Amino acid sequence: MKLLFKKQWPLFIGITLIFLFSAFNKQSEDPGFSLTIEVNELRNDEGVVVFALYDRDDAFPDEHYEKYYRKLQGKIIEGSSEVSFEDLPEGKYAVNILHDEDNDGKIKKGIILPKEGVGFSNYQSIGITNRPKFSKASFDLNSDKTINVHIIYM
Image (cartoon, rainbow, N blue to C red; front, side):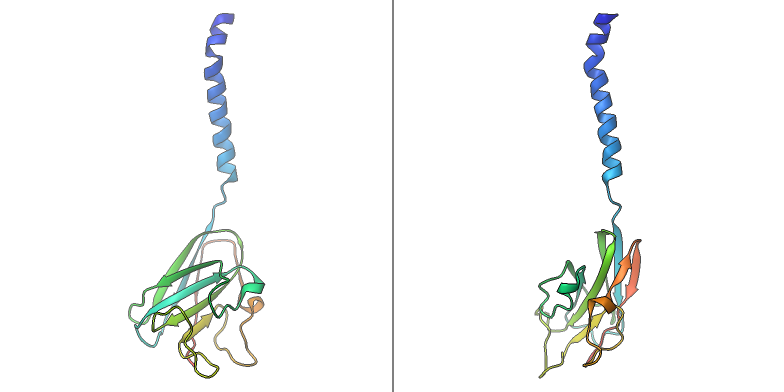
């Protein structure tokens, strides 16, 4: 009997290790959430829509699109565009959108104001007294979510 146990010992250890690693692996996986962002009523189908997602107060707003957490581009179809960010951890986020009509990756400006459409989560308008701030634009993500962002043309 002792000899039989010695021969099966490696098999027993192997099965036990597989069970333990698979149990820990399932517990450590974060589910990750999806965030779908929609924009409608774009003034034309020219260029692309840049969707920038932020997860920090000190990065938002980001005129040059350098401090984003994640960024996607969406095609424009009949005045609308939509993207989905996948596998996002639970947290607080804000969205900044550019209707990049000339497809150069930059906000085209007049003297001060943008000539291309811009949008921010939780904002219907912007101005001197209503400048975008992370505290107002941010929202909690703790489940899959879809939001619509209004594009503002100056």
